[in-house]
Length: 203
Image 1 (cartoon, helix red, strand yellow):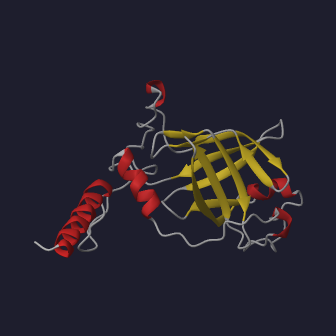
Image 2: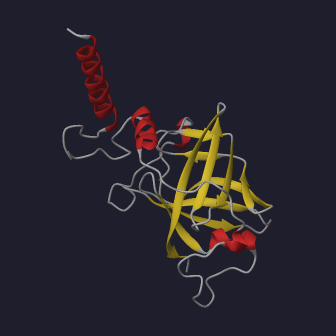
Image 3: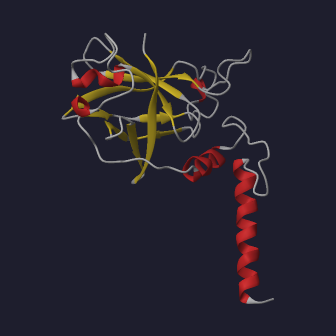
């Protein structure tokens, strides 16, 4: 067998392995597994394999224009509260987030929808490293609190990801020039970035 043929064989093998792990069909548009059906490693591979095309350069919240800002009562005057105006949808995987402001001036991030949260058998946080928390529902899960606004960005003390069962040690949230909300978490010296788009107005 030639060197080229061996290389092609290895590539096909790796593609098949990735397909089995992530639930993605290599040779067609087969039914993809949900985040709950995949393994934690499969979710991580799936997360980083999704195509991304967005600006990662921070823009001050006061300079951002979002689709419903012109409607009465939608746009917050305080830049720190701009994340409160909309419901945000992840562009890497299905899931919607709403931010809330607490009495002490800090913010929290709440997962208000994800696949499996609107059926009769509600999806649980079964990958949580803390066994006592594995039976809590994913819907309305607070995956970060204690968020503080500073110089045009929001600093998060941690970011929990229920699809992975992993908590980032720290995070930063900011707008880009297109009005997307960028959330970046860091764990073990590695960082991952996720883009969220405004899809609805917070009542």
